[in-house]
Image 1 (tube, helix red, strand yellow):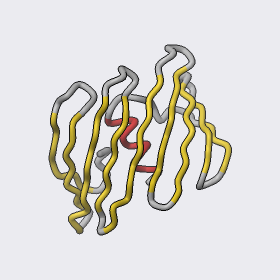
Image 2 (tube, rainbow, N blue to C red):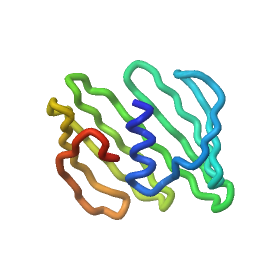
Image 3 (spheres, rainbow, N blue to C red):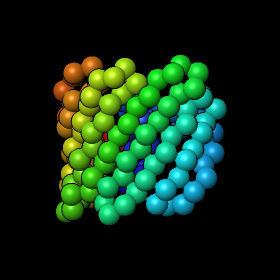
Image 4 (cartoon, rainbow, N blue to C red):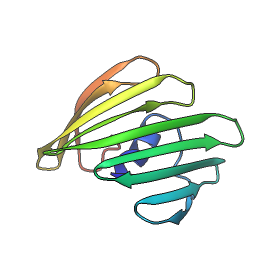
Length: 119
């Protein structure tokens, strides 16, 4: 699920993958990156929650991803602008996933991704 959360940071523009340094383990970790972001992630029982803050801008964000089983995940959170967003995805097999949701600007999205896509 960690890759889902990181992918969502990138997809929703709420963070970067630049030079992150982390301490902790697979269940609880805190990371900082070169863009001023710090974030804490907990992974327990199929639920991954991340809280983030940017010390340069003062903005904060969060996300929660739940593994629903059967290749389905549901993710929701609040972006740095304070707006909520959500995303649902389902593994279709053969390296393909369907996804849909609403971004932090209120725009709906949906589609099918293949291995290597960032969604």
